[in-house]
Length: 173
Image (cartoon, rainbow, N blue to C red; front, top):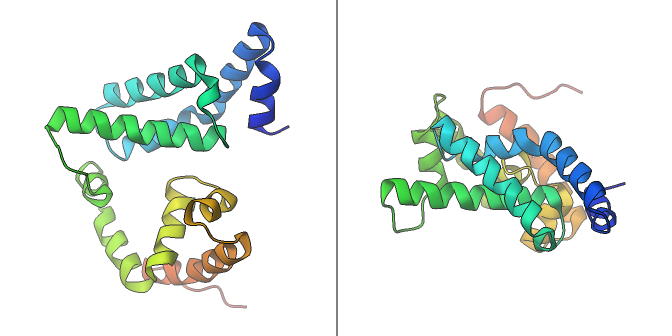
C-alpha cells in the first residue's frame, strides 16, 4: 500500500494515525534531514526543521495533496530557506547553488558547473529534481508538465552525460 493510501485509511483512528506517522517519521527522517542540510549547516537548525516538518504533517494531514514524500521534501526545503533568510537577513530569493556550495564541506560548485556545461537546461532540471530533491520521475513529469515517457527519455539520456561530466567513465556495452 502506498503512503497516501495508508494516510487516508489511518485518518479514521487516532491509534492508526499515530502508527502511520511513526512509520513515516522513520522512513523519511533521513531524507528530510538531508534536504535541510543542503541549506543549513547547524545541526540544531536541521533537527528543528525535521521536527517542524513532521509536526506540520501531524497537525494537518489534509495538506498532503499528492505525495507524502513530496510534501515532506517541499515543506523541509521551504522551512530551511525561511530559517536561513531569517538567520542571515536575506530578503531576496536565494540561489540554491550558493547555499549548497557555501554550507557544504564538499565542493559541489565544480560538479554543478560541469553538469551545467554538459547537460541541457531541461536535462539538468530533471536530474536535480529526481536525484537531489528526491521526486519520483512521475512527480518530475507533473512538475515540468511533461509526459512521463518524455521525462524518462530525457533522464536516461542525461545520466551517461552526467557521469562523464563528473569524471566517471561511460559504461561499455
